[in-house]
Amino acid sequence: MSVVKSFSVGDGDMFYIDHNSDNFTTIDCCYSDEDNKETNFEEMKNLANKKGITRFISTHPDEDHIKGIEDFSDIVGIVNFYCVENEAIKEEETDNFKKYCEIRDSEKAYYVSKGCRRKWMNVSDEERGCAGINFLWPITSDEDFQDALEKVKDGKEYNNISPIFTYSVENNVRMMWMGDLEHDFLEKIKDKIEWPEIDILFAPHHGRDSGKVSSDVLKKLNPHIVIIGEAPSKYLNYYSRYNTITQNSAGNIVFECIEDYVHVYIEKSSYSYDTGFLDNKSKTDCDYGYYLGSFKPKNA
Image (tube, rainbow, N blue to C red; front, side, top):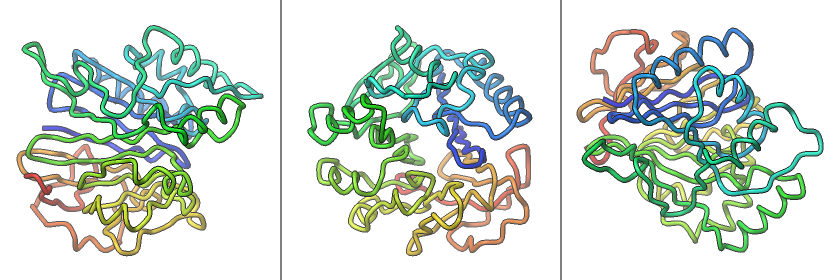
């Protein structure tokens, strides 16, 4: 069984993957208040302590993706830090950004790029299985990516150094993250990427219209569900032609990937949007939250 959790942290991102192997992965870090920080970080610490390999994937160093990284490092711990290689600076450095730079430039850092291979990210051996994480972007030699790197080196436009990557479980789900890539930048690079079919897309830039994934890319991805983040509603693109779950209304979202189904749980029982795209497998409410429904992934 694999469990993926998307935390409701306000206008920011934080996820974890409790893999069906000896791996635990965190994607970005953000908390909205001290109470959430203690609750979320302790939950992640307890899960991570059961695994032999833990990793932290940092999509980019904006505050809403690194908020609390100092405390995360102290409470949960960061052993392997995955990010794109960059020299981002900020005119006004927060403690979170200073910590990001410290880890980014340390021996803990592993710099990701298209097709990179690493134990036990996507390479298994006799000791343990892999995490099923694969990077589709960046192509480090690409001119558009190089231009994005120059901009963060000048202290601006951090969103467009975000990587694109998937997590997949054999005979089960495939999910995709794009960090905060912006629509205009995605339009520049979309023909340079081999887009696989997926089951779940976490909409870039918290679901904002400024990060909208174009219709031709969506057609290739063909996601069963698009998860729309917690940007203010006036800025959101609701991906009207696709099945969606909106985190503003749902709260925390948990995906339990077991056997040949994905079971979806949410924090808020008041969520009342159309869920006709989910089957009712008669799962009960549990520690994950309120049962919303289930679906069979494409490669199940």
